[in-house]
Amino acid sequence: MANIKSQIKRNRQNERRRLRNKAARSEIKTRIKTSIRLAETEGAGDETSVAALQSAVRKLDKAASKGIIHKNQAANRKSRLMRRIAKLNAES
Image (cartoon, rainbow, N blue to C red; front, side, top):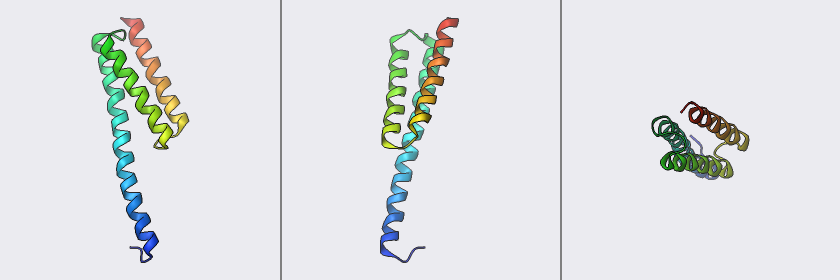
């Protein structure tokens, strides 16, 4: 446990940020899973699956802009998601 006042405050800030980042990363994973599931069941061209895909991409971009994930990591995840949904669309 820290004795220095500024370090105690820094620890509190880090904990709050860790929890906020954890929630954001969890939300990203949920949005990606939802968009894949909708593309599999309803087809990739359906308006609900398109909206889910846009939502997932928006969350990834926002997380990258806030520094929760690296911008290249966001780009890689978007690329993988788009490829996977395009493959599902081609199979349908």
